[in-house]
Amino acid sequence: MTDSSSVADVDANALLDEANSTSDGQGEPKFTLELNQDQKDIRDWVHGFAENVVRPAAEEWDEREETPWPVIEEAAKIGLYSFEAVGQFWADETGLTLPIANEELFWGDAGIGMAIMGTTLAVAAIFGQGTPEQMGEWIPQCFGTPDDVKLGAFCASEPDAGSDVSGIRTTAKYDEAKDEWVLNGQKAWATNGGIANVHVIIASVDRELGSRGHAAFVIPPGTKGCEQGAKVKKHGLRASHTADVHLDDCRIPGSCLLGGKEKLDERLARVREGKKAKSQAAMQTFEASRPTVGAQALGIARAAYEYALDYAKEREQFGRKIVENQSIAFDLANMKLEIDAARLLVWRAAWMGRQGHKFENAEGSMSKLKAGEVAVWVTERAIQILGGNGYTREFPVERMHRDSKIYTIFEGTSEIQQLVISRAISGFHIK
Ligand SMILES: Cc1cc2nc3c(=O)[nH]c(=O)nc-3n(C[C@H](O)[C@H](O)[C@H](O)COP(=O)(O)OP(=O)(O)OC[C@H]3O[C@@H](n4cnc5c(N)ncnc54)[C@H](O)[C@@H]3O)c2cc1C
Image (cartoon, rainbow, N blue to C red; front, side):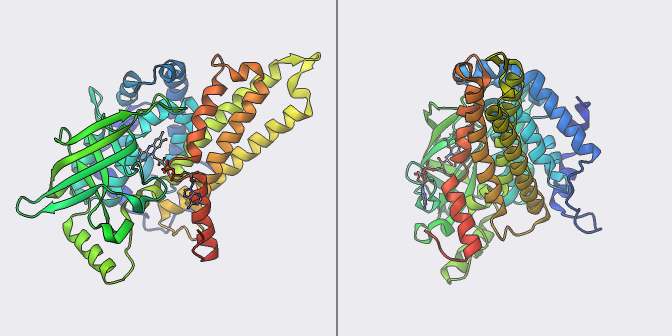
C-alpha cells in the first residue's frame, strides 16, 4: 500500500479547482492504456485495502445486513473514505483513476464497496449542480471526519418513479416570505437513506414540466420532516443500507437549492418558452456516474473469475483438473474476454466524460450496460464452475452473484440503457 498521507493531505479547494479545469493548457490528455505512476499507486493502495480489510469482513456484513461502520471508519482513517480521495480520483485528467479505484474496491466486496462509495452519488450531484460555495459547504459534510464518519444519500427514485423519473411526485414549493423551500413526498430505495448526514433530493418544482421541472435540493443534517421509512431487505449488496425516505413539510433554507434560484428560474423560463432545457437534475447525475458504476460491476466480475480460475486449477474429477475440460476452460476464457471488453468500454466512457465529450452514441450507457450484464453472467458461470460449492454460502461466488444482479437494475436498468443507446444511434424516439 502507498502511504495514505499522499491522498489525505490534499487541499480540498485546490482539488476542486483542479477538477474543474479540464486541461493543463497543452490540449486534452491522449487516451492510453498505459497507466501512469499515480494511477498505479492509487490502484495498488485501494487494492491493498480491499484485500486486507474489505475481503475479510465481507461475509460477516453480508449476513448482518447492516452498514459496516467499522470498515468505513478504517477507510476514513487511511484517507480512502474522504472528500480529498474522491477529489483526487476525479482530478485525474484522463478520467481513469475513478473507475480503477472503484474496480479494486468492489473486487474486495460489493456490499462494503457500496457502503463506502454510496456517498459519492450525493457528492456527484452536489459537484455537478452546486455552486462552488455549496460544494465547499456540503461535500465535506457528506464524509464527516475519520473520528466522526458521516454518509451522503442521493434520492431520486420513488415508489411510482423508477425508470421513469418524470413520474416524480415529491414537490418543492418556495416560501418567498421566509426564503425557504418546503418539500413533501416519499423517496424509495435510497442508498444510505435516512442514515445519511446529507440527503440530496430530486423534487418537482413544476409538475406540468415533467422531468424538466425537477431540481436538486440539499437537506442539511438533522432537518425536521426528513425521516427514514422502511429499510429494504435485499437479494444482494446487503452491507449497504437501502431505505425509503419521507419528506413531510420539510423546510430548508433557500440556499439549499443546488445551483441557486436564479439559475433555476432561468431554466424554467426557457422550458416554458418551449426551448430546450440544458439539463435535467437526476439525469445529469446518472450520466456522469455510469462508467464508475460499470467499474464496480467489473470489480465483482473479476473477483468471481479469479476465484473460479483458481478453483478449476485445483479441483479434480475423473482423474484430472476440471480446467483441463474444454467446457470449463472455454468458459473461463470467455469470462476473461468479456471482463476485458467491458473494461475497455468503461475506460472509454470515463475518458470521454472527463474530457467533456458528448456521449454521441450513449457511450456512458454502453459501458454500464455491458459491465452489468457481464458481471451477472460471469458470476453465474463462476457458481457453475464451483458446482455444489458454488451454490453454498461457504464460497464467495454465491454472494458475488447476488451482488452483481443490482448492476442490471439501478442507475438505469439494462433495458433503459438499451433505450438510451438505440435513441442515440437512430435519432428516433424509440419507446
Ligand atoms: C439496492 C438498490 C439501491 C438503490 N439506490 C438508489 C439510490 O441511491 N437513489 C435512487 O434514487 N434510487 C436508487 N435505487 C432505485 C433504482 O435506481 C431503481 O430501482 C431503478 O431505476 C429501476 O426502477 P424501478 O425499480 O421502479 O423499476 P421499473 O422502472 O418499474 O422497471 C421494471 C422493469 O420494466 C422495465 N422497463 C421500464 N420502462 C421500460 C421501457 N420504457 N422500455 C423497456 N423496459 C422498461 C425495466 O427495465 C425493468 O425491467 C436503488 C435500487 C436498489 C434496488
